[in-house]
Image 1: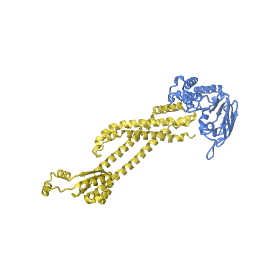
Image 2: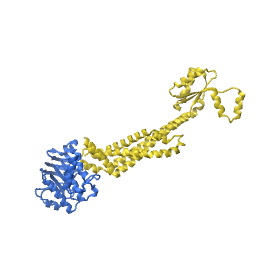
Image 3: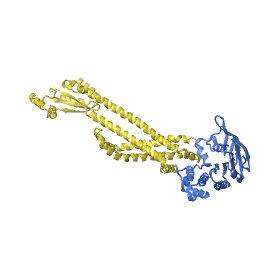
Image 4: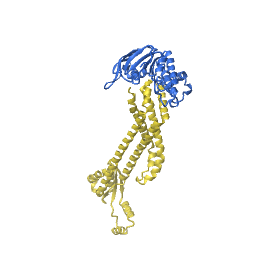
Length: 226
Length: 302
């Protein structure tokens, strides 16, 4: 489903963010990317989301070279991927409900489908009663749950979560990771970038370890080892 | 398509209503810009009014010999009226000239006594000529010298008044070019300020634009609400400025009338309200939409 083939990202003159990365992710997998800050986890996700272009190598998604998708089809590609960020990246002037509904709106969904699906997903993330609050009126954990709801509302094929628990306390961290596991069990591929040792060790899923831009380990039931 | 349009419209309105700091800043600047544009419109109007009154105060007279027949005078008047530069020709008979002379010198006994001594009307009939443009008087005078009817012309007073008329022409040209320059410069600065303010408000929304891109919004779905917001700012600013200028011109109109040779700002404002509204709408909406379009372009690239 997702293939990285000898991918490097070098910032001029010679600062390598990623070097010679190759791996393959199959549909329905839960893959954690671990590594210290600056190891290249976020760069790897940015390359997959086509926010950045690789200096060398190719990234494939469902058999298509991500970096050769024409601009006109870029929104279509991005609608197949849900993204969750450490800093939530919610639209500040939209309520929790509207932030989630926005994704369906850009896809041209009908109003009654939006009302039905958004209410459903808000219930899944336990925020039905906070639906009409703005991001500034929500706690960090609640914001991240809105971000996850937004990432899964359109039933994407894959969800990329970049340090989703970075700003959360242990209680909310467990909560968010539990949600991601639940989503994965329903069939969605999850890529989780994190440096939270406890999260990785408890998950017991595939772990790709990065160190200074290089892939140093890829284990089926990995542990946090840096 | 219709659903997308409705959503873009709603989103634009929500952005305007909820993002109060950026809408407020853009609206404030747009009100200032439209006020400047409206004042420049007034300046043009006042300048045209002043130029017209200056030009109206100037005329030349051609005096007709006593020997000229009524037909010859009528023919000369008709010929003068057929010149495109001539706005008006008025015949002043010997009797009217005398009446005006007596009226003008009624306090001056010596002059009146002299008239009595002469015993008859010594004044000549004349044609009083007004041109559209004071700079055209030399051509009209030249025509009077070269026309086949030149024999009935006793004198053209242009040559006595030429220095004043030419100074006036230069003054008019000076006013015109100064007003043009001021309009151009102030207009340019106003447009630049508005453009940069809108650019800054969009710059502050760059994270929002990035989020929209990442969740798969098409470029028009991202751009649309900003354009609608720009339009709402333009329309709101037009209404605010129009409402502000009613009392302002009413108050200033009376005060300025004495300085501006009778130019009444309030009357000018109400008489040209439709044009002013059109100008404000065009500038307000045009600036709002164009600067949003240009400013957002760079954030849509990836």
